[in-house]
Length: 184
Image (cartoon, rainbow, N blue to C red; front, side, top):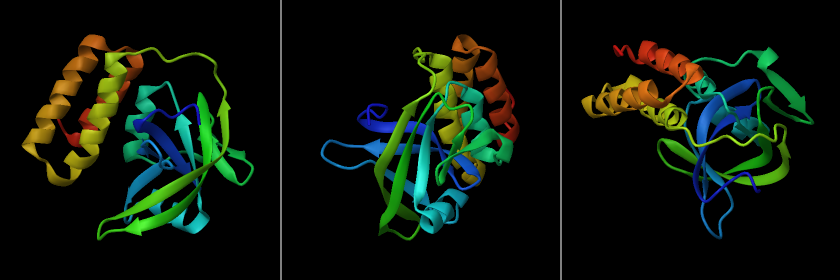
C-alpha cells in the first residue's frame, strides 16, 4: 500500500458503475477505513458487492465533477471483478466490509488486493489543486445546509484556486460555483 500515506487520503472511489470522491483513513496499526453516509450509491454498492477501488487522479476537475454528477460508463474500465477510472494515474483495489454502523454512517474496513501505478509521473504540490479538494469537501456539505461558515471557506478556496490554479482547477471552480450557486 505504498500509494496511501498516514492520515486521510482523498481519492475517487469507484464502485459498480459509480464514482465519488472520498477520504480513506490510514492510521498506524490499523487497516485502511472509509466512513460512508447512508443512502449514497457508494455505500449501497459496497454493501452489495463488497469491493471498491481507490483512484488517484491528477485532474482536479474530476473530484468536483464526481462529487455532484454520475460517472459515464465509458469513463470506467474493468479490472477483474472490479472497475476503475480510465483516467486513474494509479489505483488500489480493496475488498470492503462494513464493521460499524451509526445512525447516519457506516465504517468500512478495507483490505487491499491489488495496487497499480499506471502513470509514473509525480503530481507536484499545487495549492490550486489542493484548494479544489478542500472546496469540494466543503461544497458536499454546503449544498445540504447552506452554512455561511462553509460558504466563506469555499470562497477562500476559490481565491486560492484563482491565484494558484491552472486551467483544470479553474474548470473545477466553475463546477463548484454552479452547484453551490455561489458567485465567484
